Length: 303
Image (cartoon, rainbow, N blue to C red):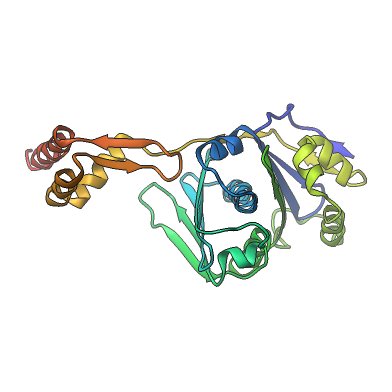
């Protein structure tokens, strides 16, 4: 029986659900406009496009489970043709993604793409608290396997992910078994539900994950289960770059370094790797950047 506590979801949305009288919760995300916004800014080969889309949906799913106020950053640092994959998702489910690669990628799988690499997960609370970063060797033949193995070892939570992406959209489904004895424990709890629902979800095909609305997909998969749905949460592509942040980066480089660039090229250009926005600073702009830095520094000493 499906217990509906949700409005009709938007195309780019995260749908939370849980199985009644059990320690199992789930999330289902569809990315349409947000995914196409990434593809409009980057001409990824088909094979890499699928991996970027999978990591992007996984970041949204994991950020939602953590209920962050800051941001979650997932990085795959590869030693193969794909040298870097980065996805960032904040607590409001604003997401962005980028990748670096070289050479031909068609016809090779995930393991060959990244080679012997590392997986890095960063939690940036953005509230003055300490940033957490975990770095492990890549363990798995897909984005889903890498993340599942990481979650099991780090959080000791049984987590399963089903991820898919094509030229039109990206989607992902997460199931997570919460620790026994927690808030879900109750008389009559269904202890056998985890193997049952994961087996059901293993029947899911990529075209179903990508093409079916969240409520319909959940109904088809778990028609014999008591499932509670919650209000969907919108997901948006949004890049946090800005001219002010680039100016701060130039200040960190220092006036001598920036003037060398200006002397050689006539202008300092910085491109955002996530959204491809270009920021240009000529000699006048640069002098204003460092002049404002002097004013700010001087103002802090006046009381």
